Length: 555
Image (cartoon, rainbow, N blue to C red; front, side, top):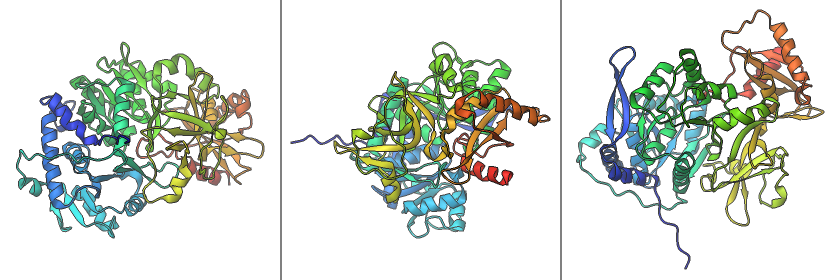
């Protein structure tokens, strides 16, 4: 008889860590300012977090939020966010996590597609739900974290008042392929889609993060992206919740981040490229070092080498800034450190060879296939391209999600059935493999510019122009008929750049492009005050919006 896989639940990590280090801090939460520069924090230990999440799990179960119930969670990062998330996993419910910054229209669409039965939120979230009609056809259970007004349902405080402080709860025994959560993509290249996470996906992610970055219990984490904060307790790390607006990482106050790192001797942090850029600029100006950091991790968009360099200069010893590659549907896929980028691959990037994203992580299989807009129903080795050829990146591994909730067509476009077992996920990205097995990223498939003569890939072309010292970033877009587009380079200058002689700068950029065959046909350039970017990371450029803007400018 074939042995069945052992049941697994990502929430099981919390009681395990509470048993291993009960009095160790699990979360430090900013409470109030002692002075302009100093903040007081509340501390929650692992045993307290485990106990309170069990109390909440019992209360949720009594309310009807139990195994399989899709539950929207709209609570800001803090104690309730952590405790409720682990409580939902403990009961076997299915958290539906959406980014509040994705826009009102997208939020309503996402919640309609997820068809949630329960809604847990702060008062402001419930008011928005009422006014905008979120989840109206499906919601039957309402829970307010804070003061409830006119919308009915229960409050968390009243539920907990009826629950003994020592109330235990047996974490639900679930199977690896059982749905654990629905996490919506950022929607940077279309409408956000709900990636269906299994408990096996989460378990694989936790183990890979531990293995790839050598993360150990007792470390201190500063997570500046809420979803990454959930991995810290599972890995036995203390989380220091930063003082920031999580929807605007590019506007973070670097003083508060640096102070938190110093105060708690933070060993690891996650930050979007925009946040890393802001802190790196501040650190360079102040001549700062961050000796406690063992590693920093940045993802969400390619991190320019100059941004890596600024931040890496703040690190000491063997510490590095790592840039894992992945997506909501599959993370991590590849990883590379700042040392390899700055000493070797940045030169190739500047010459238009793409951005090196490293080798696939253990257990991940990655291939490059021919570019296609059509569904591929069945995998065959004949799809694979040769080393050095640019194509679509496809991946297969335990951390890869199997589909999108309620989106059959999107799932069919993104997944390829493997007759040998399992499936491949099409990342929607383009790249190639070099002769050392490293993967080089060349941009999104949807963003390539197809002219009458050639196909231009965004990342390689943009990197060439980004070498100009006055350029902060560029974005290549195409306008016109799909197979006969006109390439247009949109340019955002470094903050504080002299804009009195843009004509001369234009000529300098044309000269840079003319020196490379790859960019020699890019003649049209437009200066843009500030690129539109995604809310989640403030780093992914909305090239679709720039293309519309460019067409208007040229008309």
